[in-house]
Length: 112
Image (tube, rainbow, N blue to C red; front, side):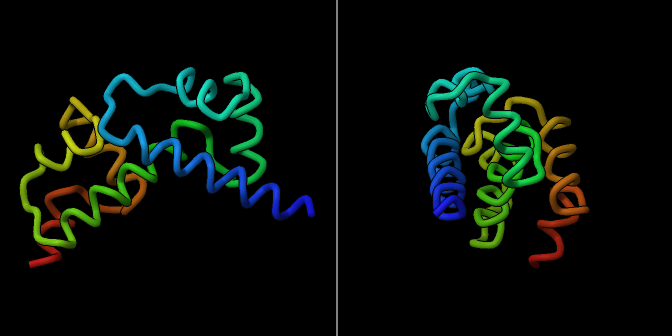
């Protein structure tokens, strides 16, 4: 039973992030509020269940979303950044590289 609850929590957390994917104001506090936990409880629970910090968890979902855009033919980095609510090109590139192991430009050119 406990495992099902864990899966439901992760699904709910993913849905919350996806529903706020383009919100540049979405942060760990608003994430915690949306799932009904304190920021620290959210961090501990995500760390225990996914092995990721809150920020890493959110960033991995944003990168997967952006990757799907690039996979579907989008080649405008700014368009993907806007879609995932990231304002800084350097930050976007950094989080993309952490998740995918390559820069955004390298990923896009690998799709051509």
